[in-house]
Length: 84
Image (cartoon, rainbow, N blue to C red; front, side, top):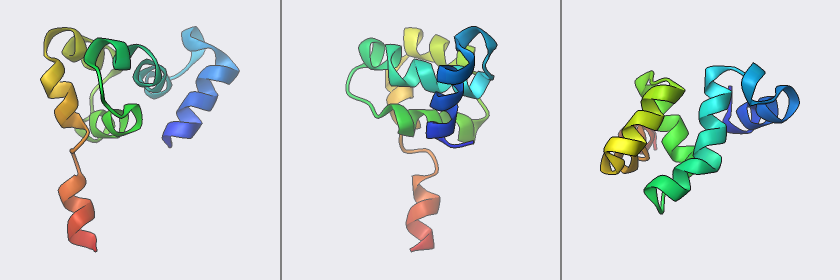
């Protein structure tokens, strides 16, 4: 599932009826930016997915350790660099 697909799922089904990945994308797209500051919602979502985190785990991290949320943006970046 891509970030765009996750956001579309939230729009189609609503937050209450969507998957965890879609709920996490909605959180990253809106609330996360207010809680943590200047982060890319898409990159944080991708990093959290790469780590196997749930929506609630990410929300807890955002509330208690925003710097770790910032670090999620760079998860998997080493893999992308080595491919090129």
